[in-house]
Image (cartoon, rainbow, N blue to C red):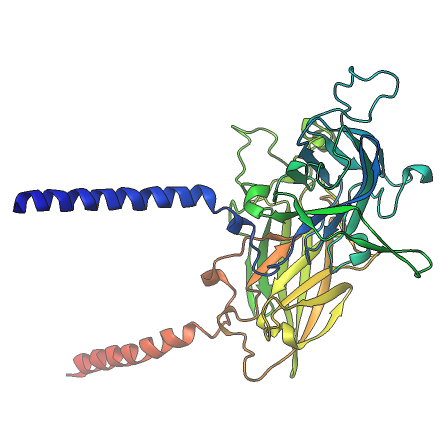
Length: 456
């Protein structure tokens, strides 16, 4: 009996191990929502709201509104692209404030032809300057949406859509599925459409409330891992008390490899620079960066500039190395423990971010409108800069051990590659002190022994 028990026990152990392995593998493929979690903006998302405002003989008319509830992540040129899959055989009869990129096969319709007959339409915003009879409120910005902190009034985009071959009541309408959002590239993952309480609207005279027939929401969240395989920015450091300039880590965003990947970067004095910029990758917005050791499209430089009795000063410079991109509405998010004592900031806008209650160590910086809110493409003018003045807190302030440098920096919502902490500029007298304290007695003893031997 005993050998059989041992055999059964071994089988149970093997079965348990197999079950644990199976659960682990399933979790790797199932729990993907954490990829989009942002510790500095835990509730940030883009919410797409569909409001059915009226029924038609064969469907409905809806106003689709996109809200960018992200604090510091925006959508820049060439703008957003929204897609979904119809649940049945719906068609789009007409649109106001947006359009589909393809009409699809509408051959089964005679006379009045729909705007789009595709099962999976792709919608883009109309451009500024669109005729007024083709506009609705919050449309026609070329797909550009600002972040919620920078400009909440321009963090909204809307269009109207007339849907046919669809349900005509709350019970017969089938919600679209498989929503996708590109802004302008990948990075966003969207959940399923959920029916919510109908939206209420206040009339222009503010004396009457109307209500949507039906409302559903779709929530999309961003993940830097889905957006690109490599980082898009890096950080370099310097200080007044150390001649060392700590450059961005080598190959932070990629490595120069013109042998196997010709055209991956270009020198600023290249006579064929103009033709390279307008080359094949221009239509896809593929970055064409200046040849550097880090190969990043954007570099953020933090320079500890001056030390006063009660204050200290920092200069921040953002440099664009991408010849194919003008960064509109750019922003910077910086983490540093002294931001709770920020006294003055020059030529940048500033907003404190407090993702955790009682902890004010994160700041959002962005350009002044019509002055430096546009970071132009690589070249002599491809940079913006500002200075920050901090008040010293006697309980925490120090220049030792890299305290004066930021803990983390984001550019346009993407985490930048920081240099390793042991490479930070240190105070000139911080490390030699320890060496002198050890060497001084050793040298004294050595000289004493030589002296004794010489005169013994």
